[in-house]
Image (tube, rainbow, N blue to C red):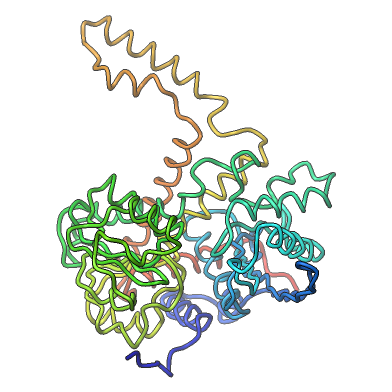
Length: 474
């Protein structure tokens, strides 16, 4: 039986409390600290749509946090329980996330209170286009002002509808494709965007395991190979993170949690096989290659090396935190560990790689897509063949000296970087550099007690410096 926790703070308050702890490690003017903590503005929208001959009313929000840099950036989620508090919290997190990984955006987030599974594609398109139009009317969509992206319940299809709606009403905007990111590649999207958040999680974990001192702090040693991993949520983020960890890093995925239950297999789960079963059977219940657990939340408490919450916020809270046995929690979702749970886990010695850093892969690659749309040219188009010719000449020079070049090396050198190669390279560099700054702040400051506080302090400091350098006007 689950005990309901009554003293858990809201998601928005949880973010603010973390920010306040980070601010306490800095020397900021009080008024500036209050400004950084606050959301700039929130737009609530209520609109009707005729669905199958019946009028339905919908409510949604778009919050903006941190217009110190424009455009502001952040996803749009379609979920039945989304609310203004959640949207504000996510907008704030996006602002800190962008600052932390040096992506030149402010933070924003949108939400529509809807269960997309209840609607067919035609109805969902009508609802999405109307929501986009309502946002446009108040300048909450535009390549220079506010750029949405996919989030829970949305994907490339919805982003294509939004971009099309914007174009229809802003035909004179030559940069109309940059009004939204996460689009299909054929509609101005970028290769590697769909996998970006999940792959960013993996890049962040790889960088963590490059530092033996940090790995030892998590009561582990060595690299990712053979590490036992539990993944909560097999959506876009969880699926790609688990698949890459399994196939490229040799990690063992021993449990997967989903809305209809969980699968446990200490010998390892083949993620692609489970994902295919889930697609064909509308869920993971009945999957034959593991033990089915009806209450999947209990699997959060299984022994493992790495726990990856990759779905909703607040899944690790004051009620279950004391029973979590993971050595390392990698926050692939936004806010999966509550403020109260964070204190309990820190006291237990559980290391947490925070969401503000670890799931920044999505906005990083969205930035690359935005640049691509503004420049009107795909990445790699100008230099790929030039690189191939240069490398061919290098191989000829090496072989002329009497040194043989292996076939594998020849093949690698003679293939210039394509768009997805450049995207993955840029993402890898971003995640490496950001973690190095976080760990430097953590290990060098006595008043910084966790990676989370280190990451937030860096983000807040960058935003504060940006605001002060611009000047504060009356």
